[in-house]
Image (cartoon, rainbow, N blue to C red; front, side, top):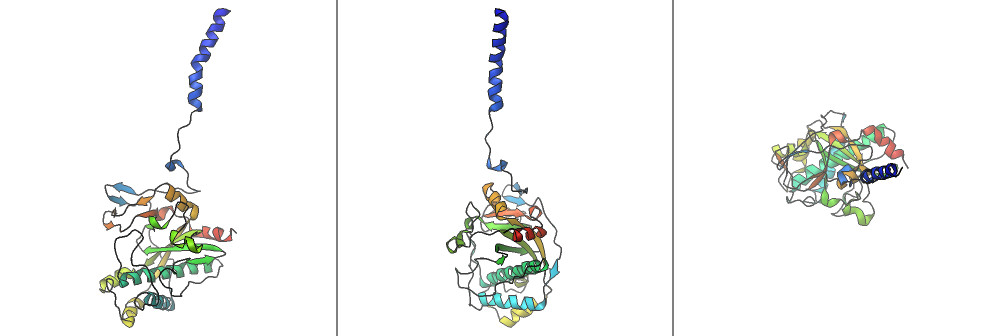
Length: 289
């Protein structure tokens, strides 16, 4: 009997370390934290170049009416060449100082994108209109669109664009837009991504009007009005999605080469088009009060 008891005790001593190992847990890194109901793809890196891994081809959702293009043109001209308002001449953390032609192209594109989002909301039963007021520097860009009490940020790019880019210096870890924190408008419920065709920037570049600080109103208007302008509502992300992107370091560094050919002027958080939520889910965001 004594031999049997000593045998049992020896077995327990051998099992004890195994029990401790089972109870141990490995530390969880930021990359192990699951995104809220989504998965996000990282760009493929090769040295200082970064390449897309989850893309969506452009398809035309709708085209703008001529009166919309004319109204957006007048707004963008007033905010730049007309000097009735002001936009920043550089990106947050960026090195390049933009000429008025570049700012005009960005303003024209941004306001057209807002019109596209308003068209989408009208389609699903919500009435909202873009803001065409001109503001001094520091008063613009608080909220793009408000629908059902929800704040919507609208981002845009060219027809072949595949990344929603947000300058890292503009956002805190809680996905709050730093330039608007003092005004209480720094928290967006959704970020909608719009692609436009043609590119205003490319049109102005071909006419040698992009890198200039002067442009005749009628000449510039004539160049833009002769084209058909269409758009593609790619999708959107939520604020929780952006928090995940920030926490897990989805960052495109300043100076990096996008697809091996486009240098990045500023450091940006990025989201690929293939990772975005479908536009139809925006209805749920707006109805969730």
